[in-house]
Length: 350
Image 1 (cartoon, one colour):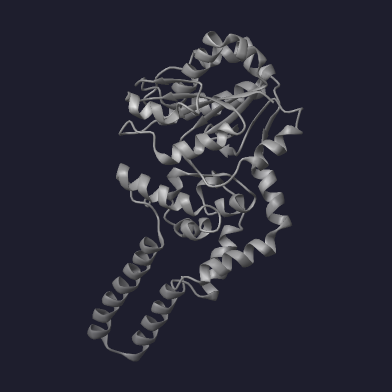
Image 2 (image 1 turned 45 degrees about the horizontal axis):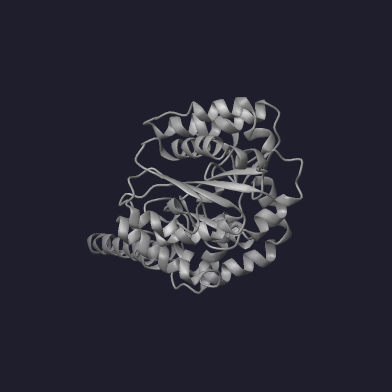
C-alpha cells in the first residue's frame, strides 16, 4: 500500500528532538514522509531528517498542526501530483506523542479493513458541552476516496489561523470528522472506545494482576489501596481515555504511543498509573524513558515520576500529622486521639 505521512512538527527551540527522529524512523517503515515544521529551522536541524523525508517545509506559520497539515497537503498535491494520484493513503501525524513500540499491529490490522474510508488510533465522544464523535487528530489516515474528493480538499485549503485552542478543536479536529461522516464516509478507530472495552473484558484478570503487582511494589500503597486504584481504573470510560490511567490498557494492547501531555506533572494529578510510566515502559522501550526525561528537561517541563508521587503522599501525611498534633495538645482527650489515629490510617491507605 502506497502512503505519504504529512508530519507536523513544532519545537520552542526550533530543534528536531531525538524522540521525533525515532518516530520518523518507525513511520518510514510503512510510508514516505513529508515533514512540515511550524518553526524556522536551521539547515543543521533539517539535515537530521534528510534520509527520512522526501521533502520538507520549515518556517514559522503560526497555524498550529492543522496549518502544517494544510501546507503539506498542498505541496504534495501540486509539486508531487503524480505521486499524489497513485497513493492509497495520506496520513496526518503530529509530534505530540512519544513512540514507545512498533506500529506493526496498527498497519496489519487496517490492511484487512478495506471498507473503511478514514481511520485513526483513538476516538473521543465528548467535548466540554456536547456529545460529538470524532477521531483524535494526532494520527489520522485518509484513503483515496477522501483525499481526491474536492470537498475534502476545499476543507483543508480553508484552514486558517485561530488563536483559541478550543476553536481549533471544534472547527478542525471535531469538525473534520463530522464533515466526513456527514458525507457518508466510514470511520474507524483501532484503539477506539468499543475496541478497548472488548480487549479489557477479554484480558481483565491478567491486566488487573499486573497492575496490582506494579502498584504494590511501590511503598506508597498497600494491597487494600491497590484494589481501590485498580477498581477505579477499570471503571466506565469518560472523556479522553488516552489522557488517563486507562493508557495502561492501550499499551498492553500494542498501542504505539504516549501523549506528551499526559506525563506533565500538572496534568491529571488524580491519576496513579501515569506517575509510574517509567515502570510501565521499562520492559517495552528503555531508550524512550531517557528521551522523555531529556526532552522535558530541555523544554522546561516537569513530568510525573515516582519521586513526585512520593512527595505528594509525604506532603499529605505530614501536613495532617502536624495539624493533628496541635489539635491533640489543645483538647487532649482519648476520644480525639482515637479519631486522629484513624484519620492518619485513612491517609496512608489512600
